[in-house]
Length: 224
Ligand SMILES: Cc1cc2nc3c(=O)[nH]c(=O)nc-3n(C[C@H](O)[C@H](O)[C@H](O)COP(=O)(O)OP(=O)(O)OC[C@H]3O[C@@H](n4cnc5c(N)ncnc54)[C@H](O)[C@@H]3O)c2cc1C
Figure (spheres, rainbow, N blue to C red):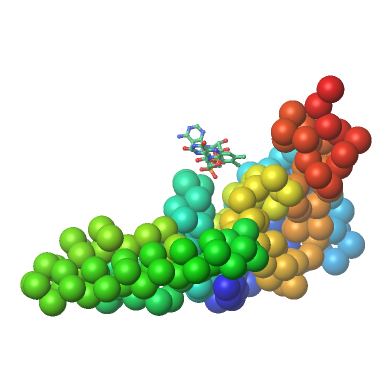
């Protein structure tokens, strides 16, 4: 799996701080960006403390994601406040050989064999259908969720914080969690202040919406 930050709003932290400054001071638009790093940090902290999240929407981040399963991409695209472009199975020939094997399968030799046989068979049927003249858009119906994909994803910082809250959770499915952590790592490289308090609620504010499920990382929080 690869997650690459392709582009982002230039100076994203100052952009968010400028939006906050516009809300909270009499600053005219010409002076909005004229502030020191301390003021940028103070304003971002202030927004966070007040739960005033809309200024975070002014910073956008575009990622290229490669080598995730279709099972994972389906979870990612459920986040609606984002833009997506995904490699087409109508125009690009499907390839069951390029797939993701979940660790729970990989570590069980018999399961891994069964999984590999099934994918090989799915690939054979896909190619056989194509050879019979079935268009790719229909032949793809036999491709499993394990097949890998590529996509470009754009989200603003507010939506990213929301996604990290849900998907970095220890109880999130392993693959979407891995994607979320890689995205967070990229974001922190270029906007550490915006993403200083990003991640699952247990790390951000000590709460746990998954408490009832019994998180293995927080045994003290197991349901009674
Ligand atoms: C632990 C977990 C379990 C899940 N289980 C299932 C499942 O069993 N079945 C299933 O189908 N999905 C499941 N999902 C996916 C889930 O239902 C959502 O589709 C996914 O989390 C993305 O939606 P979102 O609410 O997080 O918000 P996003 O789409 O990321 O939008 C961000 C926020 O914008 C607001 N928003 C966006 N659109 C609207 C709207 N139309 N109306 C009002 N407010 C809006 C909401 O405040 C929302 O939280 C699960 C997700 C998680 C994290």
